[in-house]
Length: 348
Image (cartoon, rainbow, N blue to C red):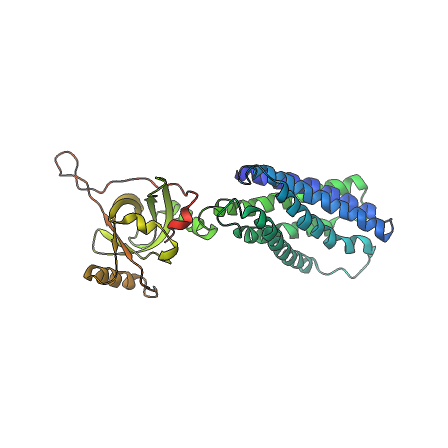
């Protein structure tokens, strides 16, 4: 989906910026009202292209209905772009009074941050019936447009006032292609987060899986199997050593997470320990027992600032297995699980 999403944003902004550039040039010689209408039409064309192509990629996630998505995108992106570009296009002031380019780009980034957040929030109202975390999309668009909008303003600022109309339109299309690619690349990182782990945790997970830290304890990766779905979910956790063959994990906000409930009475999980995926037996410890106190002390020794409530602790016993005549006591090696649709429920 990532490639399709980036391509959709690129094509939409290529078309939209070309139309907007042509509309802005044509609006100059016209009267104020006619110019505003022409610029409005250009902005609506940009918003329509973006809504249609993005909606085509999200068709399955939207339950096959993209009308609401298109309308939301047209109203916010199209009208917002038209409103932002109309004063400059109709002012006719080409001499002096132009702020430094750095200030223009900084203002464009701020504008993209605000408008992107608004656009994402409106689109999230369409997503809220189809994904588990729709409001993350507001952050995605804020970040995406904060990157894309300076590209758009850079192209608008560097375009020559006397350029022929075809050259101006082509330059607008090239600017839109770069801006759309940037928008798609940034926002695509949030697409899996709409139903799964937040972007920051996916980043940590990817880093840990790639780097495979050599030291025991610290940040590591845990893979569990859903009790009802039977699917595997991988997520980063903060662990502490307990003896020579066990780790302790404190489930964060346990009332809102479900992964630790799968460990009752005990179950096998996969853990990334010292750069190797191993099989472990997960055990749930509740407050009040001596074993819980020992595990808690081990965790505090590694993470002094940890906050403990009334929730449980999880002990992961790295589990040796006997092969053939029982002389081989090396832990079983396994692989990581997939980050599934409900992975956020499992995050420690």
